[in-house]
Image 1 (cartoon, rainbow, N blue to C red):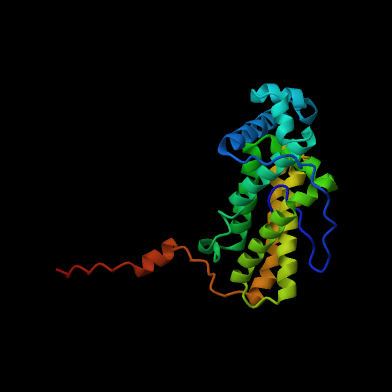
Image 2: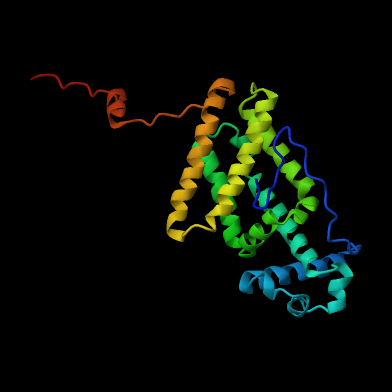
Length: 252
């Protein structure tokens, strides 16, 4: 469900894992991790400013203030840097997602729930300009799916658990499908937003929200907890009726 998320449909075996291009040495000390973070930060800045073509190993090295040898110590090539950066952004996006899918929000109405979910994901993409570029590149590239598989399954499991809390009587097969479908629709809905003229994006996202609400409404009506009720607003008429009547003044 996060911005790079790919999940396997229920009943379909996941594709064979590809060998990760990030087979260089892992940082073993905090100092090494800081160097890796600086490299990823530099790559992210270059991608956001000039695109992926401009983010060469030499350019990343210069922006990070690190030697070219330092880059190759941790990453065999720039593709490995892009993949690691995409994974870092995806983890951050996933963490943002699960600030919405919390026990406190289990009884939230569907429309505001999906609106907040999608808008939080889009806000994340707006904060990190490299997201939209890496999003397209790594959704198309099958090699990139390997290192992300475990994270995707964790996302799918979290979404499944949230849906199960809202609809505890939903059969397991339908629960699996509902989790996969919601992850896929949110992911694709957000991804396609970047290919739509800015003036049409709000209307597009509204349609994505409506689609999700219409899918889940009958499921929750049949299998849900049946405790989500809208609190009616007190109208002026109701307020008037419940107001205390003033005692009539005695006639003189």
